[in-house]
Amino acid sequence: MGHVLSTAIVLLVFWLTLSGRYEQFLVTAGIICSIFIALLAARMNLADKEGHPIHLAISALAYWPWLVWQIILSAINVAKIIINPALPVSPTMTRVKMSQKTDVARVTYANSITLTPGTISVDIEGDDIIVHAITRENAIDLEGGSMDRRCAKFEGSV
Figure 1 (cartoon, one colour):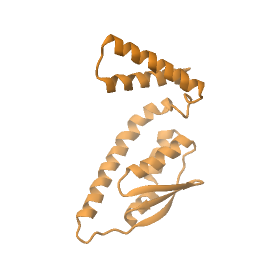
Figure 2 (cartoon, one colour):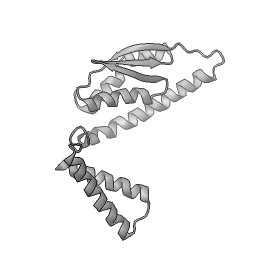
Figure 3 (spheres, rainbow, N blue to C red):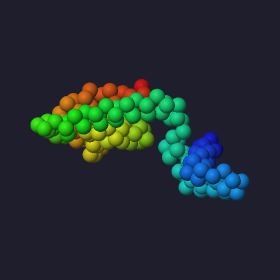
């Protein structure tokens, strides 16, 4: 029941944010639609721990700012590579071990890699992610495992 309620609340906040109008009719319609969709999601077994991981909300407050900072640093690094007339790229494919246990955490880790400029998650094979990196240094940084540890801590498996 907690996931259904949190789904309804998230949907309502999303509705109100996008609407930008807070007239009684629109707010009431938003409440009704949010509850209906949350109940429909529960009936379809989508409002569960995996489909709506509200239990990760607190740890996300630490993980997301760190990820945004990594994205900024990587964007600066890629911009330096692009601006350099010598274009010092060394495209590399590498396998990165992941310690995440749940599907949500594995997808979060793969998406975090892809969101970081200069790296793209290509495939997941077992406990490895195949990653394309724009430079060998980017690949070595990923292989070091700092992002893996942060994402595992986000999941709560550390």
